[in-house]
Amino acid sequence: MADSFSLRNVLENFKSCLSDNKEVYIKYYISGWRELVSFMNSLGSVFSFISKDAVSKIQILENFLMGENGTHYLTVQSMVKYELDNELVDLTKRGSHPESGCRTLLRLHRALRWLQLFLESLRTSTEDSKTSVMCSEAYNASLAQHHPWIIRKAAGVAFCALPGRDAFFEVMNAGSHQEVVTLLGEALPLISEVYQITEDLYAKNKLLDLP
Ligand SMILES: CCCCCCCC/C=C\CCCCCCCC(=O)N[C@@H](COP(=O)(O)O)[C@H](O)/C=C/CCCCCCCCCCCCC
Image (cartoon, rainbow, N blue to C red; front, top):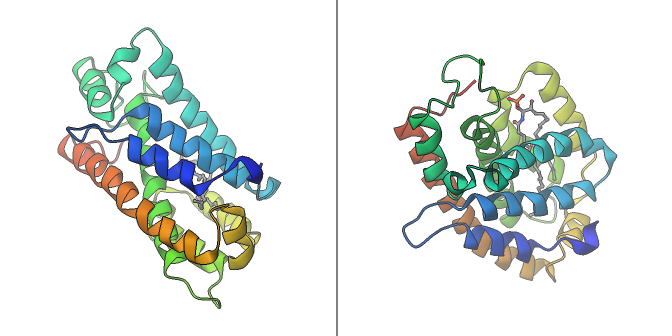
């Protein structure tokens, strides 16, 4: 529910994501996403097809982390090394490893780019700005290119059900509008750093187009 959501918790998780040597802890990465999903659930059932997909991906990663090879899933860097070294990733077409950690995290990573663009838009928005427009612009500039027509249409319908900017700021549960803007200003560099480190790692290992 919206009551339990706090933008501060999202901020804290993304802050905890980075180790001293800039590795990305999967534990906090998925905790950050869990917070965001709880926020999205509070916006209504029209978003449930999105939240189900996000939850199933979070769960796949959590299962790896809690499983017998969990030590290899502590960070995104160790996961990539372990799965590549042991040929646990379908690199060109889906085969014997349809739900590898690498391809699952890639889907959330692409969604993180959407989040980054959307939050930046919210941060710099004015009273006249529409959340549905900001959300859809962020989506078109990021995730949309990876989704088929039917998903893009369904996402477009869901965006129209977003609350207006004022109500949206309220459910973010982080104080006055000015306080929300300030907190977004703190959260965005952290989210951007986590995004960029992951993007560079995936690019270096040619993992950005995993099927
Ligand atoms: C700080 C508070 C303000 C922002 C709150 C944002 C809350 C967002 C919470 C979760 C975002 C959802 C993340 C969606 C992950 C989608 C991963 C994906 O691309 N999956 C597709 C591909 O998967 P595979 O088939 O290859 O396994 C899958 O087909 C997608 C299905 C569902 C539709 C995804 C639409 C994504 C729209 C993202 C915008 C969410 C809008 C929420 C508005 C608050």
